Length: 195
Length: 250
Image (cartoon, rainbow over all chains, first blue to last red; front, side, top):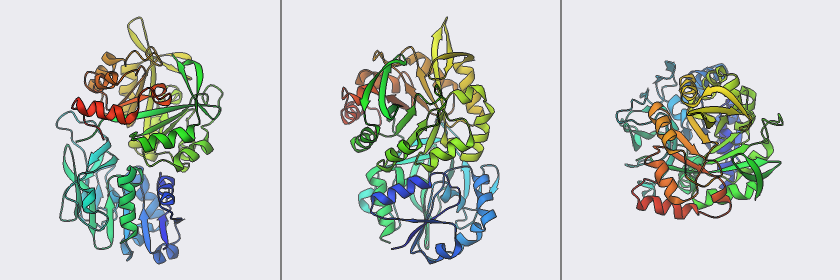
């Protein structure tokens, strides 16, 4: 299987590569359009700031390519946020694969922002999850969140319930970092590989 | 509910894990690659890797060693030690780090934190504040605790938050290595003062100290080194103990 990671100055790409290596997979890291288009599976990682990262994607034309991909695509963390329509982080227009808006957490009970650490995921849907993962803890680190919608594939609760994962057609996305979520995260990546 | 985090810290000198008392008298605590993998397996929530000689000897973080540690880790990984530029952070991230810890450079050039948070996102930037209580004031020290500055813990960390730090790693130099408990009062005040998460460091000696740091100390994460490295407290036992005290852990 050809698993390709989109290379675009995304911060923690190396963490994703190591996580795949631990599952016995050697991913291809590339920004080449043709290589990305012919991959069996695509991972769109992300750690960083929305406007800077979107600017990189536009510069390379990846903002046009990614929404047109037909194979299973997994966006992670900022990757998921950039797949939405708009982010409040420096008022950034994103790729719009999901119609949701990305908003800044508003603490209502003294919660710290960023939401950083291990939290539960519930109401799991879509092929990247399975029953054994319901209510397990995964690693989050983010200050902006995606509201719940019909595309919500997992819910987490911080300040309010929000989308911990999204799914629409061939696009899958997680707000948390499966590559850093221990054995639970490894299982989610395996499920994605097996879609 | 978000869980409180238990964070083993690997202080690295010349490629080995070391641990001192009050920042001096270092003794060897083993191979950092083995320790890192073992902690990940035993249920640690994050790992911090500090190249404690980096600033002092003006070396950059040991990128190759970081990479070897990261390869075996399925939990988040923070790298610190001598980081002072966007290029330094890039090197850390390319070698498998998820976050970086900025210490001396944040004091010498506070605007660096604005640059880094814009480039990499706030969540990536941990500001490590090493402080010592002098005449009733928590004074920030740099260069591995060797040099006192004119900055005070509370105003300094507030500024760091405003400039875009995603987390504060506060080490009480007075408590570090003593195993007599964390700097609870200062930690609670720091947590009340700031809106970003606090990692408490310095003084962990017993499981009760962790309970105290998460309740009275209001910390989001508890960091320790020697008690974990030398097997005095097993992370799984600590998690069970804390769960028994109604503290949410993974």
